[in-house]
Length: 408
Image (cartoon, rainbow, N blue to C red; front, side):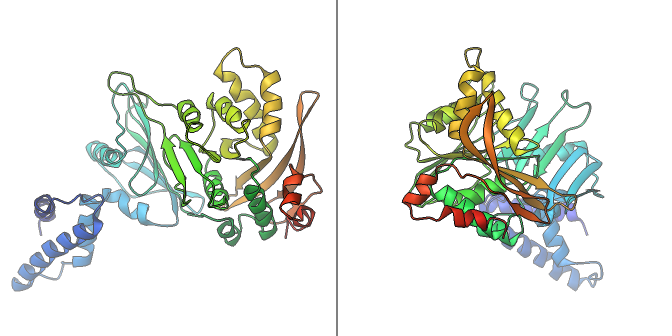
């Protein structure tokens, strides 16, 4: 059986039908099923059906024409968190926290073709002038690619999947990411407009946690999100999602995260969500939050305390006229809670610490109070002062009762 000829026939029918095989999967499967059925009839007439498996052939053709070839089964596996390739014969996956080398071996040209197809829907490009790129794939996965001469010889790619699509804190409770008492406390904190910083290492579950926190924002509020690539995917009723843009071929037209944060202030935001701060955009975020707009963002840090320290340093990158004397009290007055995420060796994510920011600075240090700690097994509540207690009192919420049950 000539599988290449079969693939050509299917591609020709797809082209004749005028469908997009990357987006119209139902029509694609119908066309492939018809092509394979025609071949099955022919094979049965010739009594050569022993080696013919229609289901397998349909799956292979669907992956080649409408999917991403040999990577498609890993993209569809719900237990695989990340896929990356260092070379055409070095394709790895992360499954349940463990790294595995796959049996996939591709040609260099096949890797390039797959990457170009992955980038097709995002409108982003790769060339010698822009040798690395971040983009969102059609299925919502985040793609990062680096090509030579930045890499030594081969194209390198990472596909990060959002395995957990939690849009509410209750889902994180089910996954044992946090206890129910902490989820209830965070829920009312979001409802009362506290600004939350979610910190942790790579793949610790920061974006998933922000998405779940955002799910508790009252439906009457208008939400603006600013990201390098679309990842949050909020299901909120009134939301505008913004993402950055790379420079064009002439080197102009780039839109940075700082631009998005500043632009968002002209869009009547009642909540501002920033996918991640890692540079000068942190200053624009602090200025926005200092205008009375509650918000959330993520940051890479090893602990909640280090996350606050990092947020005091990053705005200094915005210019020489930005001083620590301005940044530190601004951070203290705009950030209310820091939620630290961790991932254990099995791949399980959990909240390891929640820090309350009192709004005060003493001897050059932001005063904080620990609300919650956990080692992933035993959660513990700590006596602490929640920021803006007057908001909870005005809403008739017994915040002290919630604090007492935070570890339950």
